[in-house]
Image (tube, rainbow, N blue to C red; front, side, top):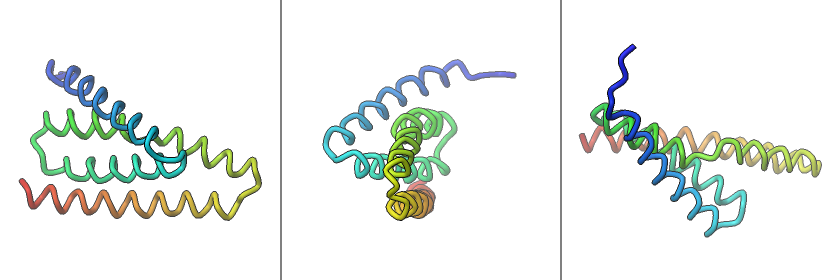
Length: 116
């Protein structure tokens, strides 16, 4: 198996930028809104990378979008809503996150194909 030697630093630096962006969003917005916003943005960015050259896709898609998305935080927040017996809010939160994530990924693909 061959791994391009540039891939590891590309993922590292993309991840550093994505993690810093996620931290900024989490600091600027309330918990569930910050997670929702970060995941929606990461979905769009990842969709956008579909049309990019492979190394840019690794840097931006795997590194940046991977670090920007907060799926573990989503699971924690959904678990807290379940623990608090706020079932309807939990289902709404998860469905909206899924629907917006898929829609934003599709929008990112369309924008990426138009740009490249």
